[in-house]
Image 1 (cartoon, rainbow, N blue to C red):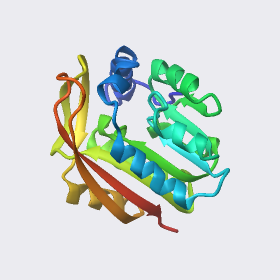
Image 2 (image 1 turned 45 degrees about the horizontal axis):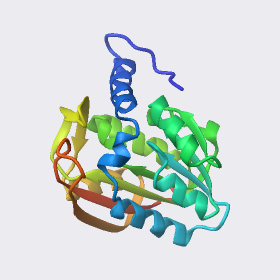
Image 3 (image 1 turned 135 degrees about the vertical axis):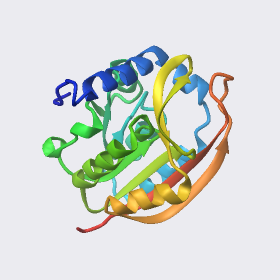
Length: 222
């Protein structure tokens, strides 16, 4: 669902289409390239331990639905996933049939989907330039209930909107160093409760080893 119009001063539609097409091309190969998601699973478990059955959880950039949407569904949560890739969304609907999935840009996220008890954004915001990451964090903050939980992951690298070949598909990526990421999250109205980082080697030579950052937060009451 896209409401931002394209134009010389607002090229978001073209940018979004490029990123979406890359993940349409990647499809199921994403899970094949990244088969072990220990940090992501651990962050999901951290959230689940603090949620009641039936809690509403938003998975931003849900991809194939594995493992995060699956985790929450199996824990008895009501899962909503958003993504900009129709191919990824089709896979998510097959992998998590009890979930609800929408083709929605995080920058268009609003109250129409309701209020959530928790949200995740695992490696999805790195597909945005830094100013739009700040906007996206604001959108996520706005749909969380006061005191709602949020888990975010990024790759640790000092880049902003740089062209990159990801599993053979052209994308643009952004990253932060860990102290900078914490500052951005706190500026968006979140209290950081815990942080973790780990080294990760994908199961393919098409994606380089990386340091993954995980930040677990609580939405401030403001």
